[in-house]
Image (cartoon, rainbow, N blue to C red; front, side, top):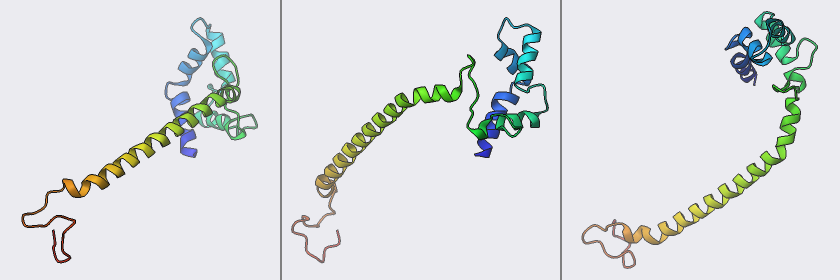
Length: 141
């Protein structure tokens, strides 16, 4: 789990660089002062270990360890967005599970039934081997 938080932090905050992240979040028409304000609000103007501590919420603020996933680009809480989308996601998961189960059972039943009726008749018998119904106990076919 820790490795996942480090990976997410590196991809979104360190990878493109703090200046780029601040510029994107501030918007295309943002002035340098607005970009600096966004960088300061997100602690992008501090060392990387301080940024990671803020990301996790170790500095007394609300962070990942407190269950706060932050805010989206429009300022809405990510927790609220996820909670609003959860019923739809759950219905898709249940529907997919039902389809998966139905298709898996149908496939398994059809494979098993076709294998049991054709497995002995479709296999070639060696010359001199009697029919499976009349096979004697000593035949090793």
